[in-house]
Length: 355
View 1 (cartoon, helix red, strand yellow):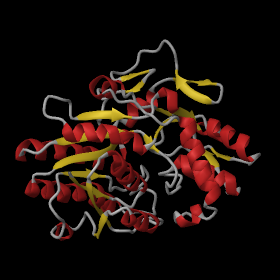
View 2 (view 1 turned 45 degrees about the vertical axis):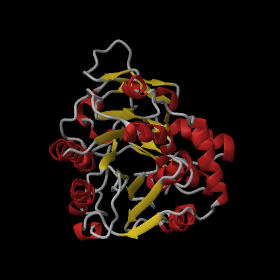
View 3 (view 1 turned 30 degrees about the vertical axis):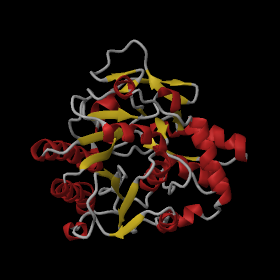
View 4 (view 1 turned 90 degrees about the vertical axis):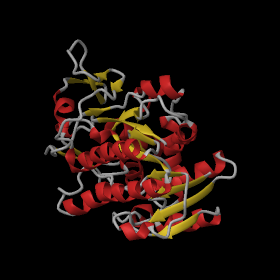
């Protein structure tokens, strides 16, 4: 089997590549990356040493696909993954759309020409912000949870947000670009007869993630705590009670193998996340860091940002019913893995382009 991974030198792409090499005997991997992300060069040598053929190219440029070989599948892990992208004054809204939507179009055209299957690594951020922000929450020790006894919107429960939850805008420029990519991918696959899978993932985290507060929050928080860098709870009373679930990208590999071997009759859009068992607030993450590294002050900023939500946990019960899939790496294992990497790489935040 021959597989092309776009964004292969990012955290998700490189993790999937290494895990696929270990899981699929005889697999041939190709990678496409523009290497503009700070830290991506760190993964180039590691992948080349494992026999991955890397191509320097940009998914926004259609001609960069002309030199790529035929493959059986494309896994799209290339994206600007920040919900603040295009509105933070540091990034361009046009570039965001070019990366996340125009890039998808170019990949789909490549799949059409070579009749290659397509797997999109999508996001929980395709779900509507309004209903998520309006759900009643309460404090449970140092974390938000859904308030008991309330009438909840369709598609949300104590188990998390399911595929039936609303995707009506606003969902952020990032979320809308990924949702549009999902729709286009499904249309291309149906029109031109190649298989498409849409995997909506919760927060992805693990060792080697480039730690930034808008993208790799778990890696950023642990690295910053260890180095005694400034940390801030933003919004929601400045207590850090907002909750996200966590998933290691290597736990997607058994699923990807099943998807690449599957035939029709299976729902093409599905959630994959850590769920309630792997959900944590920033305040709870701070407690974990304090236990490992000692005291560190976290400041508070009460200002609410436009796309912030208090509680987001992915309900992956459909994935379990359909694929027999469940996360294999526990939250504690993920945090420990990040911490060990942080201890071994004292300049990781600088390498990530943050400082």
